Image (cartoon, rainbow, N blue to C red; front, side):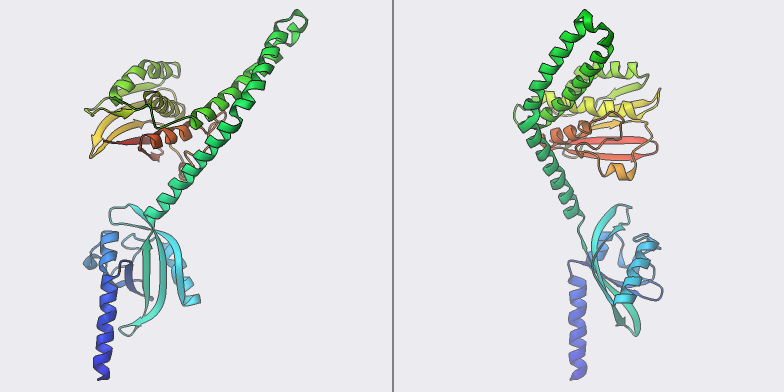
Length: 347
């Protein structure tokens, strides 16, 4: 009778293990080799049970060595861990984020680790997007509330500086007046960027082809390339018309191309491509710069964050706002060979 009860309990636990919506795995604590994984583990990681059992997470490149050591040490010291956030890799090489919990158990006569993980990648991505939107809304509120009030007295000061600089009594100080005026102009440009972010609206959308918008801008982009001794190429694909705010999309293209030019040495090559991918129209801008560090990559689009000596950190923030207004997404991949930016517009 007791034997039947134990068998029923084991069968129930096995069913719960296999049917769990979380990633579950049992591995030997001695060498880390997997003994058993559930269906969710297979589906999320892309590895079949046959590929996993008998191998370690390090051999499969699911976890790196420091992560495995950290988890094992915590388990040995505490006997259990709960909701430790760590990244893991799928079979295809893509990274995911999981909340891991684990306990030491005895399984088939040996000490093992029972690990349970929730894939929270989408949640973390959503939180980042919400945080970015909150920052954009904050900057818009600041711009709307103080932008005009700052601009008006600056205009007055600039006018008096021009008048004084033109007088014979102050000719010796003309260079100083010119410097002050140029600094006021720079401050005014920053405020203008503030206001452009604050005043963007989702209306004023007209049916237009992205290729036509870029073609109209191309002489200006070519002029930028020429003055910086850079190379530029536009490769238009066959794409459908979409609803665009032409002024905003023009600003987005100019901001992204100018960022690309500034990232490259002389004779660097920048390409602009358009194409369809599934149910998306893709604008791809690729440069041959030195790339963006992972630390900076995570901060891109944050207002005021810039790697330029004289940048405001609003150019890319404006691009993200424009993309949001068009229900589009900006994806950035970067390496030491250059940066690839894709703007995905839904069809």
